[in-house]
Length: 423
Ligand code: UGA
Image (cartoon, rainbow, N blue to C red; front, side):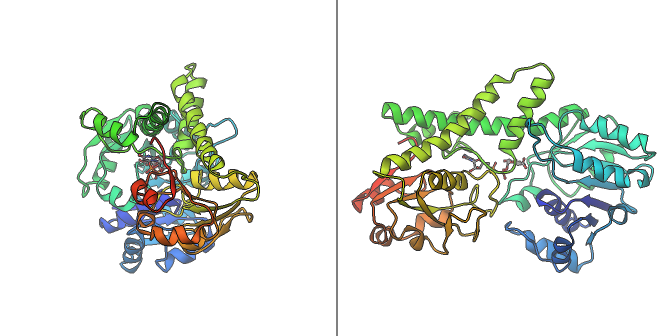
């Protein structure tokens, strides 16, 4: 099948390369010339396990091509996937202007029977809104919803082995075209009305954000009453209705999706007359969780103003170089605002926008001379760093482990103080 993907961002590129690897001919519309030039050589401009290989293969086999002109990308396509950014507007709602501008640009050129699938996270009602737009400008395509559930760091595996494929369309024919595009992928296909599919995406992210926030809240209760979060989640997790997965306490959720989507769902609900107070509470609790981590560091050093803080991790989670809404970076900025000098190391990040934060290229250099060491991103390799060398390099002796990654016993055996989450 010939497929167009509009936008070579995270979701667009993984989807395009995955579809090319499944044997489809995929033309990607990407407006950034520098990005196009890189991608044409098979080079991926961000860190994602396994992506370079399938992009390279797609380019070599001529199944994956990149185009500056969207009209060229959509020419001959049976399916056009929209994977453009929908950034939050000031009120938390999703800003659809980029998607709208693109559809206005090529909408009238879509061949009859083309399926336009919205992969970008868009508010409920967007399929109807964009269908109207295409109809008004004389296009003959059917717009459907096809939300994306990829996780950064495991996006390629998630593409080939999704838990489900959700398609929202009132047209059975359009749903069938999209289902056939995914035929090589083994997963349940859930076909819904457009509004339900659009809501599945927000509801899933809001549920997962709530689950993490619940684990964080119980960790905070543990600290108050002398319980231990690992013991509590273990005791809870054997209940199959609860489970062990996605229940790890930390500095609060971050990234480009959960913070944006939870705010957008609160805003959509409010506009529709429903006060989603539970989700408002989740968002507030998540902000407070980050403040608690900063407080743990403040309490560990007599004077934060002028203190040197070593920081392990900058990315919003392990396996990515993405700094968007990163709790690690927010901790670094908050400590810097309080007068601390933060020296950070992250295996995938070599610079940050804030020049007050120094970024070094190994974990021991980050710890050197530090009054407090903070573990802020859960990179597995941090657990393997020689703690004796850390102890010798540091000026102080406290580790604040915002990810519960290190072994508290091993840290304490070296005469250091260990401050985790929920212990
Ligand atoms: C999330 C969803 O998991 C994907 O299904 C969805 O497609 C994606 O958003 C999106 O909407 O595009 P992602 O943002 O890549 O994926 O990251 P997650 O692995 O979900 O982690 C989100 C945040 O929660 C991170 O800050 C992570 O450190 C934190 N987290 C995750 C915890 O604090 N505890 C956990 O147990 C799990």
